[in-house]
Length: 258
Image 1 (cartoon, rainbow, N blue to C red):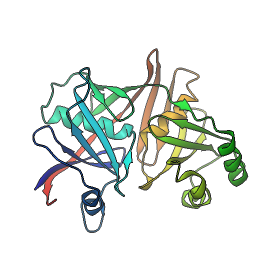
Image 2 (image 1 turned 90 degrees about the horizontal axis):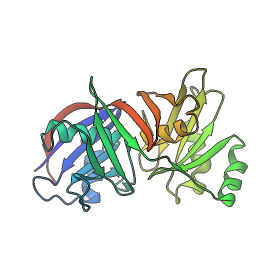
Image 3 (image 1 turned 30 degrees about the vertical axis):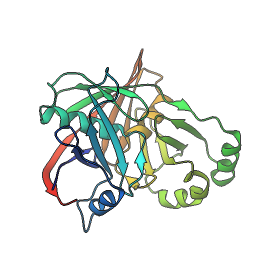
Image 4 (image 1 turned 120 degrees about the horizontal axis):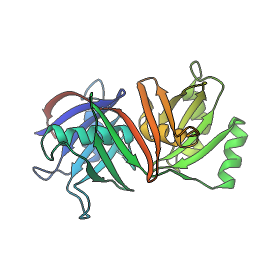
């Protein structure tokens, strides 16, 4: 039996398991089995927490999509992973440095179930040939960023009634093999609204890394709020990158057969 906990950050839901207490090997077949929302537990991503490979970090966190593929980053998930660590007393409720596949992150506990994460600025994806291919399909203002995950972010006047799945299918042959997630966003006077289609998962209620990529382009007043269907994330400029703050919520715990 494998013990797990179910968490969510703005509706982006996760099953969290660990290899801190005993060794656990994550199999693709296991992920696919329990990710099914009708026949399994159901989740957007599985989070695995283990011991670090570098001395400066306290834990190594990996993220797996519901189809079994590994994601490079999940900023909604890292907040839940940090809260899981504090809840289970693997570490005192204080700042922790977490190792991920692509970068280190500092997680900071806040009041009212919120967690802040200090993240590096995303990097731009410079590929003129790719940009031309995308331009032929959408003819809208967009940018490409990487923050452990690749993101194509398209700006639209409004996103509420847009068929995001159709846009993704239109771009599928261009972006899928490059593991690029798709987001659409629109700006109001105060806030930015976003929807995201993640490779290996589909449209989610929230995507922290996509929100960060969009926020990084809009920190004109040193802070910005990104609103998804699942809730809000706030971003603030920092000399070492961007400080993201958002909720992490425990749902339940259980055990399942491997």
